[in-house]
Image (tube, rainbow, N blue to C red; front, side):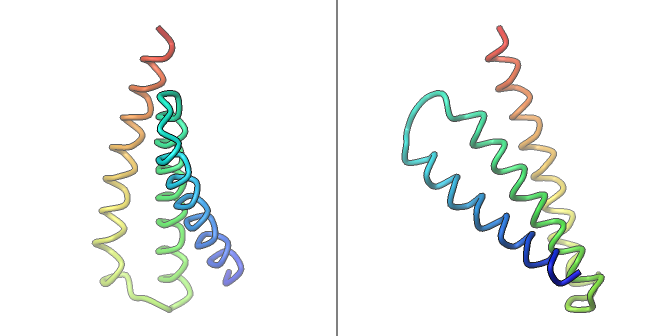
Length: 90
């Protein structure tokens, strides 16, 4: 389980690096990739939070607010991603 925690944290760091790279590219066709990277990075963050609670590194009471905040942001980013995909499909 500790290995999965390290992998999820690595995915978050990779997503941050990719987001910064795409942000500085300033091309108009990277919006979908940026939203997708945000969703994947936050999903890895949620998994990391849950694994911390499962391993006993954190208590649910302390991780609960950030867990719910992650979920709300994932829903928002998914909505924006679907909107971008629909816009590109036209």
